[in-house]
Length: 178
Image (cartoon, rainbow, N blue to C red; front, side, top):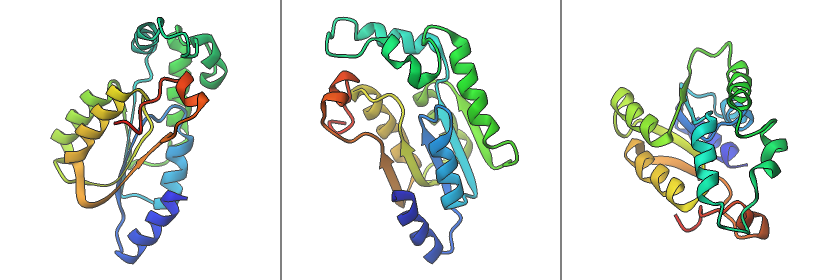
């Protein structure tokens, strides 16, 4: 729904937006955003790496209310401790955009990639950003702080999973707090 509303505004402004998504996974949301907004350029950032995700999971090991990694295997399509699971997700995302030369992929830590992006496209370059990366407070806060300088003054920022629920508690979600 939100991209549809943005589409109306961009259409009225006769603007082909520069878009960003953090937390692409298999690319289904990125594809929806791309088809809806028809961006000039779309930047897609995701970790797509097992090691750092397993470290994050390990940092939650003492939190009995946070879901165990094996509970997420179905969502990710394989074991989280195997790099091939993330290589498969990356390939799936890339395959959605084989014909689109204006889609750029950034594989790695979102903060590092946002710094890289700031150097390549400059400040105040984005018209639309969708943040759906790691959902803990620190990661969301970092993404917000590093995306902010890239956003134009009248741009759109969309956050995923802004909610309080039992399911959110199991994921250690801190989106609203950030």
